[in-house]
Length: 165
Image: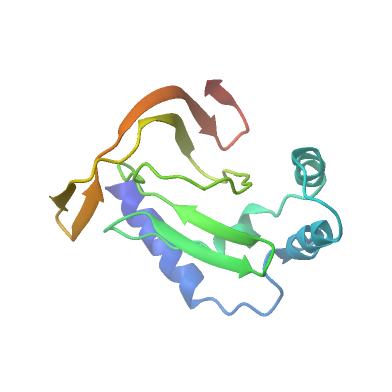
């Protein structure tokens, strides 16, 4: 609870701050401008890995865009254009994200604080025709049941270490 209150207090301070420079611009350079350079050629994993190794916004720059919520994980839109978006995703301890697909989109993750567990699944069977009503503490949603197979799981730490696979 102390860690959660600290994160919520930090997010309020960031929300109150005046942002007078482009998103993710700091003494290390302009992260967004660097990403926009990718729009001139096909985006590849190798090009992104090289960019990420050379350009990493500092924690103070990143924290100005991160807000947490006690209700669910928070999605903070930092930048979007027709080619890409930069999101700051924030989970408090114990929060989770529903199993979902990125529908073939490319994506990369950087962790600035804490750890993140990523589980990869494979659809075994298409959705059933029946829909199920799922009630949670905060909402009622209709879902379609599917059968999944867990392919692997990895724990990624803020220091760059990855365990599992």
